[in-house]
Picture 1 (tube, one colour):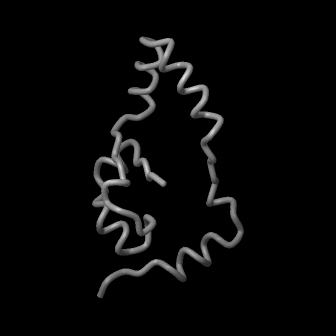
Picture 2 (picture 1 turned 120 degrees about the horizontal axis):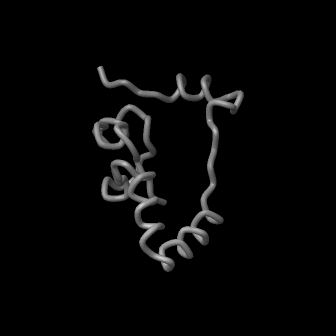
Picture 3 (picture 1 turned 90 degrees about the horizontal axis):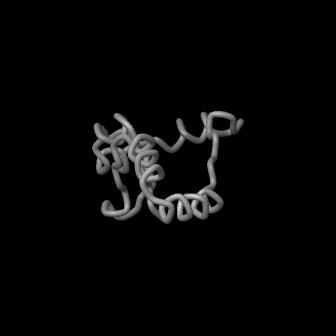
Length: 86
């Protein structure tokens, strides 16, 4: 598993702190990857390479997007398991 953090959120968050409070899963820090402007970078790559477009098409079929805000139990579990250090 890899956690990819995009945009300003990904650039500005401290991964270790996010893991400690339960915002991110407890995985090795090297598996948490900030990518900056992922959408812009990906668009530029796709424009410049047919091979990259092919790889993106394959990868897009492997990705699972979960809209957690629409999950009825999310808020309850989030508040239950978030662990702010004292």
